[in-house]
Image (cartoon, rainbow, N blue to C red):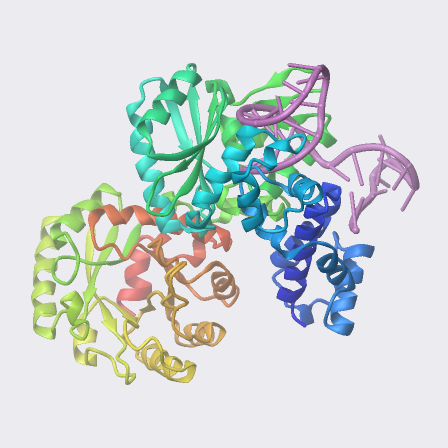
Length: 568
DNA sequence: GCCGTTTTCGGCCCGACTGTTTTCAGTCG
């Protein structure tokens, strides 16, 4: 028995109860219990008494006991016997919830997507009280696109959609201000849709312009305060737009950034003070509404510091509010230690990357092109690397406001050897080692490769330690706790690769690394100037692991970087 | 179903939109 089984059981129970039209607080209690276990970092064996957790009571506790004792839950089995399995997927149809599905089942015996489709086509659904022609049409339309609507989208896919939508929003003159909100603003690895807050005095004009400009498959809702559509993209994605007045912006963006649990916690705090939080402001006991200039002011109203969106999760962020000032922010970042140029597979010259670094206000950067093994990336031979070093030295003469260091992103070869010899490595200021090949090796083989790199005195950092691509591949088999142990032992840096495809190390491992006292570098791995924007994503993502400034190497000023890294 | 330095019962975050209704339930975020 493991935690995942319990979580899945709770979720299934909630689904079936929803289909029985159960009280939604009851359904919610099971979902909440699942969520509590999900967010608890401990494994089942590490929890001394799971039944005493807040949110686990008699009903949910009985399910856990059942699962522990017999490996199955009586409650779930009963539900499975009562509710036809075919009803579950119907919950995915927008507009249909438990109550209406139950009604269709009861009235005309609908027990699957197929029978629903047939009943809609025959006009039987519109004869059921509470259902009409329009509903029937909508269900049929939704069934058409059901298979194409993905569940969750990785952050790198989200970013493309956000940029696309933002282009359209910029074109509309009635929009005074806008911002993305929702899970994307919280820098979640995956999101199910995209949310925008729009400040305007002309919501209906903006709505119509958006409907005209955006690629749209279907309109889910279109009112004066909200527009909800499914975007016509390669993978169709839902987008929500909320229209608010300027003075409501701070409250609205807070509300629609979530998370849901964060909002619930904030509302509880407000309620205890006789106030009521909504997306339009804070309602006081006398009925007057206070609005805010900024989210900072909103939080200050409740005696809280600004809580970064990335850490707005389950309320823990409120308990740990006094730690927030120690977290790394974009303003703290003084360098980017992993960047490519046209010497290997980058799109811009070293000079252009340097200029970009200057415009970011960095005090130093490291150019780290690929090494010779990586032929597809035009990896540098020792000769070419030495030529590049000459170019970098010349640029250093030219620029006085930024220091450019010579580095490499050196491959750790499949046989565990390193792509450059120690003599060449000793000439470099900063050496990154990373794996780009033979991902399918056993954990022992991968760990042997990493250990080799870790033991080399010239290596400073391991880049993208797991090789994962969010939503696409798991990465190679790395024993991260062991790797963190080595990093501590040999004094190496581990990377948080800020590229949204990677975000590697992931949150849970960053937590472990910081606990172990290992330094982390947040790097963009930029292969083009535009990609240097990923630093923002990386910093926000690091906040999820509560990385402190002192943990992050890029917050170090130039002299400390030279002293602790380059000259060491 | 869960919870409680106001409560062991009565709340549970709050509001928008739709479709089917003649004032609101269901769904969604």
